[in-house]
Length: 357
Ligand code: IPM
Ligand code: MG
Image (cartoon, rainbow, N blue to C red; front, side, top):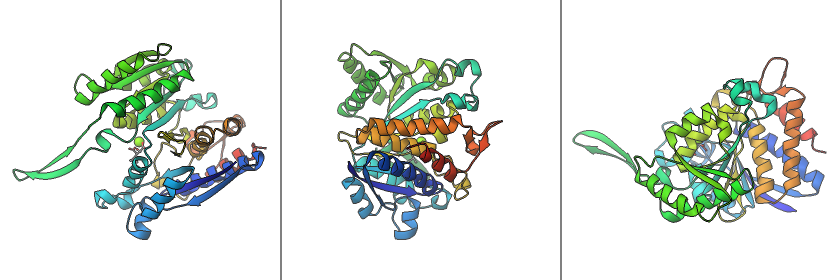
């Protein structure tokens, strides 16, 4: 199969981790006789430096035309004071929105080899951690109007959270369909004791759940969910939630699995073209030092093969290769523990690629 993949390396550790993911994907293409055509485009802080804008139209156009997009990370302290509509993060939000990628899947699964990297007690970890957060990605407070105005001589800021029924319903469907392929349990997370958006969310989810009698459904308040993720993560299979709650809970969920550096994500809309990115940020403090963990990005590549290109076996090969390297005891700094062998980002990528043959 021939596929065109747009690559946004971005800022900070972005270039290093994406290079490793491309290495692994290239090896997979060789093995299975596919042709992955990678086209690099600039977006984020590096695009501000080069062109004065975080997302040049030509970059966006290439994303819209591609079979899928692979992204490293954008942002960093260097662009902290850039005008808000041109911040590196805007590039990411605009691509998500223009591509219509409303469904963001963020798996939180513990690798048995890394169970001692989890900050949770062994007794909790041993019950198993394997759930996925289905985050609504192009609505809610991220995309409502944002404003800072002067009222009575002081600054006044507001950010509007808004949802319509169809936006909730489509992400709900993604969650129920995802659960059907897993352990068939959906928990919808909201703040319906306070927010109108959440009350609507809950109403739509309940209505939708009736179409999925084979899936066990319940809802949970977001503050309680934050607590339950550290208290007993084994209770979760699929969590579906709005944009900002999903942003926050997915960082928490990643950490209970050991390292945020391990977690991939997929963002899809109604078609098969999507964007795939690790859930961590650009980690400017370790950029360019060959210290980053490329596994979250490599596994994002694996998700692309599976979800956008229907390449199940190819995707599984990448996951298996990651498992093998972990079995052999190789670790980047973030997941290092006693008795293991510490390696850099580049060697991690090469070792994973070498297991694909
Ligand atoms: C994420 C990130 C982004 C988000 C930022 C960089 C805009 O935190 O993908 O989780 O908030 O969605
Ligand atoms: Mg985040």
